[in-house]
Every structure is written in C-alpha cells, then in structure tokens.
Length: 505
Ligand code: HEM
Image 1 (cartoon, protein in one colour):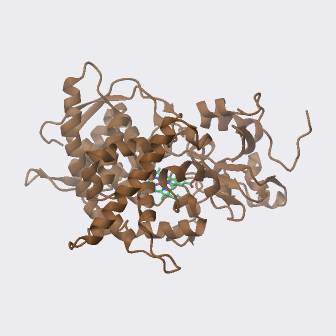
Image 2: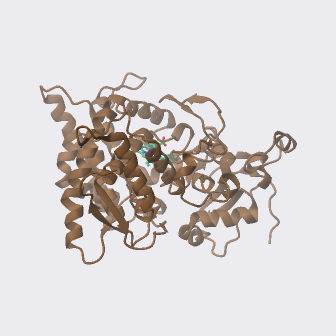
Image 3: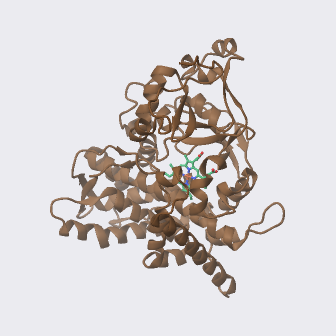
C-alpha cells in the first residue's frame, strides 16, 4: 500500500476501482456517511463511478461547501450534464453563475405576496377536486389496500403547481398532452442520467423529444398572450416577460420556457415527496392527525355561521402545521446531499476536517489548528450533507432520529444556527445560514428560491386533507427509497382515506 498523502483527505477503503463505493452509498447514503465519519472523521474522500467525492460532514462542512468561493467550488459543472437536457439550454446550470443569479432575481418577481394570496384558494380547490374525483373512488374500488401516498401526492403537486405558478394554460393542458410530456421529460431525471448524460436508449430519445415539445408549448403561450388584447394574467410567465438582464437584453421566449421547465421540475419532486411523507406520517400518528384537525377547527371554523372560514395566506401557517412541515423537512429532506465540482485546488480548513471540530469547535481549538488543512484537488467533487446533520445525535440529542413535531414548538433554536448576517447574491438578501444544522433548502448563492411557495403549497394541501378526511396506514411505516434523484418512501406506501362526516371539535 502506498503511504497516504497527508495533504489529502483520507480515502475510504473500496474493493472495485470504477464502481468505488457506489453500492454501499447507493443503498443507504446516510448510513454510509455515518460509518465513514466514525472511521475517518468528518472529511473523507470516496470514489463513486469514476468520480472522486470528498464529503464534508456537519454544519461546518455544509458551510465550507455551500458558501465556498466561486473560484473554488462550482455547481454548474456538478449538475449541468443532468439538468440541461431536461431544463433546456441558456438557463440555470447551462449559464455562468452570474447569469443564474440574475435569472433567480427574475423568478422572484413572480413569487410575490399578492400571487401567494391568490394561490391559496386555487390550491385548495385543486386538492378538493382531486380527492373527490380520485381518492374515494379508488377506496370503493379497492380490494383491501388504499391509495399510494406518493402517487397521490405527485398528482396533487403537479395539479396545484400548474394551477398557480405555471399558469392557467398549463393547467388546462395538464388534463391532455402536457401530462405525457412531463412524464417523458421526467424519465430523463434519474440517477442513470446523472451518471450517463447521453445513451442511445429510448428513454433518452423520449426525454429530448419532450424537452423540445414542452419548450414549443410555453413559447406558443407567450406568443398568444402577446397577440391578445386582454390584460395579461399576473403570474410567473408575465413576470418573466417583463424582465431584462443588466445588459438591457430581455429574456428570450426560449429562455422563459426553459426557466418554467426548471421551476416545474425543481418544485415537483421535492414537494411531492414531502407531501407523501406528510400523508404517511399522519397515517402513522393518529394523535397528531387529530391535533392538526383540532387546530384547523380552532383557527378556521366559524361556529356562529356553522361553516369553515377560507384559508388565507397570512393565517395559513398555524403553529402545529408549521412545526409539522419543519419536522418533515428535517427527517425527510428530499435532497439530503448537495454537490459542487472543485475548479481550483481547494484547502479544507482544519476546523472543518477535525473530528473534534464537530459540532462546534471552541475558539481555542480553532486557533490551535489554524493552518493545518487538507487540499481537495481540482477536478474532484465536494459534498455537503444537510440530511446527515439534521439527524445527527451529537447535535440534536438522543431523539434526533425520532419524528417529533413538538421539538419545534418548544422554543429552542436550531442547534448550530448562528446569526452570520445576510449576503446579497443579486437575487435578494438572504441569511447566509451556512453553519446551521438545519438546511433543507440549502444555503448560499444556490439556496432554494421556492421555499415560500413550497410552504404555501404544502400548508394548503395538508390543511385541506386534514379538514375533510381522516386516514390510516395500510402497512408499517415505509423506509427510504434512494434509487431516484430524491428520497422517496419505499413501496408499499398505501393509506386508506375516509371522508369526515360533519364538523366537530
Ligand atoms: C435550489 C430544496 C421546492 C426551485 C434548492 C436547493 C435545495 C432545494 C436543497 C439547493 C441546491 C444546491 O445547493 O445544490 C427544495 C425543497 C423544496 C423545494 C426541499 C420543497 C419542499 C422548490 C420549488 C421551486 C424550487 C417549489 C420552484 C418554485 C429551486 C431553484 C433552486 C433551488 C430555482 C436554485 C438552484 C441554484 O441556484 O443552483 N432547492 N426545493 N424549489 N430550488 Fe428548491
């Protein structure tokens, strides 16, 4: 064995050269990271399908990766081969970082409070219609098992996103051709596509055809709107049509179409998975389901009139509902790990790399270790794993791996959350938040732009489901399925819905 280069992070032992740690990482990524941390400390390198990845675990590791300097860490080189064939060219990771920052700013113009206010009612209507049309019917047809929680959540998510963010034309087409296009495009968003961006397979050809057709569809909406005498609707498409780059150039129709596809894809899997976990967790915990219903009753039932008050954006996030969504995203973050490519040799400070640096190194320790560091060479990848920190017992305590909504009602702060001030990345001032142990939406310049929308969407979906139904799990609580791009509940994941009769406290 060659002696280890002390300037490089420790290399995880593996038998098969090209495959590397793909099998153990692929089957249980968080378990793999935990085992490696016990053996090698919080920073280590593992080979994975021809790539070398250095994990930097813990809040300091997340900060190192997500708030790294642009000269060192690069997101587009880590993701573009997966995303550009799906989203299309000239947007997101197919453009330099400063252009993405401008594009995120444009999207913010479509995510206004006024729009969120309108979305609440639209989402509620979609959820009720869906449940009435599909779920009870399925229940009566069923032979012993209920509906699939993930499939149900996926359909509700795409219907509600299209009725709101995507615009009425997309919603109208969802019942027809658009759903199939979405399906084909989504077939290009898999781990296989991540490893092999282009293969001569039918699913790749379907992906490319669907991408082109979907672009044409959005472009035709833009043209129709432009030629119409009607006032344009106040939605994302209109917001994007009104934007221009710092150079004075407007967004082209093609770029607008590709941004809309990116928003559709970025929001769909993440919110659908979270919605599925919500249905399953409430099926598992009848007491929590009852308490969420009681909270709806307390806040929104008008006993004098004998009817429910409408949900509203301002009052939607009642305490228990809000805590429940937070806990869902702690225990079931759709993206447990985030990657960047190293584009110039990048030093890892000792404070990040030392086992005793976690979770919080003392100032003395930091001082003592100043100057001692590993280097991740150019061409390799770094990985932050917020999903690991979010269930780390050394940070959250002995019940870190238990689903406990109440932790968010007890007034304690997120462990590790320090006020590091805000940074303006050109698309809005946001909290740097890099050293937090709770980062379901990421941190830094690539932080999620859809958090508020996701909270509105999930909040209305959960509140509507709970008000009008009760449901039970048909089997034990499911484990994680890591074979897709986001963490989904493994099959079987069925629940049986019952419509609530009458209204009671
Ligand atoms: C970025 C999570 C919903 C649009 C991200 C990132 C995370 C994340 C972790 C950071 C990626 C990285 O640093 O590599 C989530 C979760 C969601 C959600 C958990 C729902 C529960 C949405 C929605 C939209 C959206 C609804 C669109 C409306 C984006 C965009 C980025 C992003 C545009 C920026 C990518 C970048 O700057 O590199 N999201 N997301 N997300 N998300 Fe979300």
